[in-house]
Length: 187
Image (cartoon, rainbow, N blue to C red; front, side, top):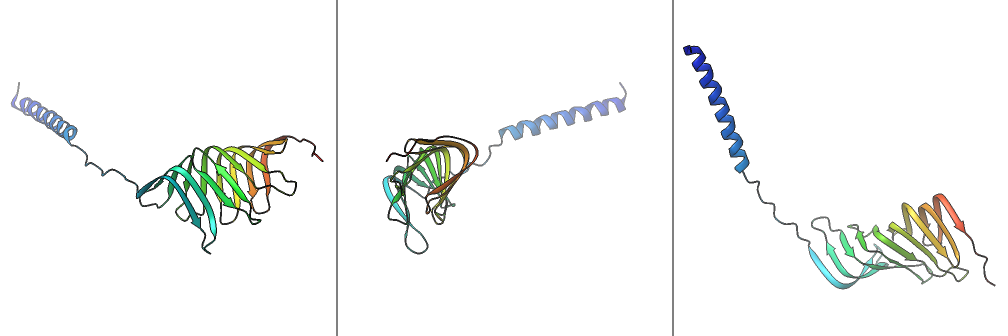
């Protein structure tokens, strides 16, 4: 072997060994440990009343677990039971498996097995919504979802995809794929 060939072989061996050493060094590097994310506070078996900007009740919620998220000031709830006031002194009652409330409490996201029942209307019947997700906007008395919804009022049942509800006027609109069974009103 010539001196030139030997130099090339040694240089190649040095590159391979250097690369192997860097690779092994990187494997041993431990990423910095992030501090655990903790909530600002946790409430158990609580009742919370939220007020709007005018100092009137926006909603009341009762449940076994509430957690205020770090930094975002939003709330995460487990098995909440919400009560939204109606203009006629009635109340909309809602429950779900979980919920999220925005930092300003202007949006309430009810998630997983949502059931919402309105106050009795002119006919004396309450309207009931069942879906998997429902967004309630308490400041403007509206509720909406793009998921499948079943609406029950007395013996009448409507089902459709997408819901827009005006909680103040006690009116709702199903958006798509609507099917229904209407029962005659009882005298």
